Image: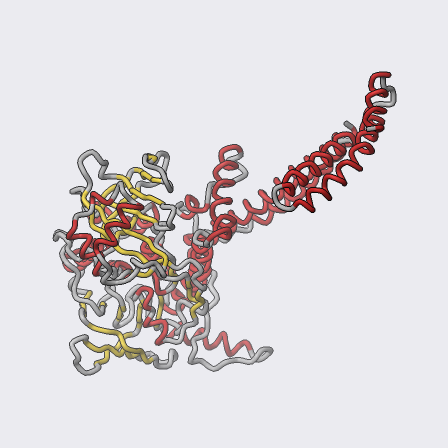
Length: 597
């Protein structure tokens, strides 16, 4: 008892010391973005074209240069003389709304595709993986759209998802879960429908400030010196084969998604992770029966490794299902046999196969499979050319669309940029502050998301096991341990650097906790488990080995049996003498009998 008490005291002191250290470390969380911009603590980056100063040189030249850049920069309140937004997707059009609301003029949006369809039309391009896919809008996206007063309009075209129903591998009955106590409801709508809503808002309210150049491809950019108050040149070409044309712009916004044409043309360094869990997908149009709820997210995992996920495409019971394959799967290509695809659905997803008609199946079989983007982020600067260029959305950080963070973080980028423009006088200062705050956020977002998409045993270590530990410990000690990573990333009052710091603290505390428990149990077992029990364990060990070897190798079986017979008398004698110093005559007789045997 004294040994156990001493060991427990030492372990408790160790736990307290580590907890105090962890608490002090976790309090050093960076300030949230509103405080960040209000403090106006920024460190302007020198533009690429400026003269480099060698280490140990005259730093006054850098300060003078930054002052010159600020004086020659455009003012945030009035905006630059002209702005070009490359990308007509959700992030690009949302940026146009934000800048037009600030009173900026001469904003041009260019995109290689044609104008989006009206948000009131019914969509038929279900199998165009580049344009039609469903977006989940959670608390982050809703909060961003509320700040520009567009969420109420978007909500009219969205479908609310109140829960999820899953089928585990081999199960015939799905498990239904209704979401409760969530900070925000989740809404779903098609990507093209969201773009159509933003396009209508711009046409009805800001047509005097925003122009659109559809079917126009971005082909390059030429930056003039940032110390000159002249415009940079954007090279464009129309998709119908016309000759290359050019536009002049003081500010270029790269919102062209994972294509990153603007970032490549500007020579921006991108850090890209190797995709060790590549997947391709095919979209399947399905109609739910009346007995199924039309406000749930349906999903299934199969023994063959094929995953299926379906979300409501509209409020009429039409769903868009996504069939996830490995890259080398026979069905993961265009122009496959419709009957083979039907057989695959019947065998692996019998609950969903009857919901997909033959026309939808044939179209999906002919379609080229879509590919999921790899994890990457801008490792250089989000505003590398002073006040001439800024990168937003998927152009700055790309994640796989498993948890609805792709479009939502892109919309958040726009709001953060607008906050920076409102809190600074000159564009150079605002873009420098935006880069200093948002670049670590992009890196943290990609690192957190990648940890949720690792394959095999590595995925169990980085995703499944932490998810179980967070769920259990946050219920028993909610003031010490936070919720799981997925839930933390959805909280609008935390940025991703804060989430990463908190989860690192949780992992450290979990390691300390289990180290403490293991240390205490080891000492208790070492104190309580005396020689007799150790002897019994040894006997059981050799008996198990000999039993196993009996069915695998006769020579091993005879060897283990010989060892067990020779050790058994000695171990049992040791057990009898160590249990007590005063044994009865019957015990002595039994010990002598076992020894002679």
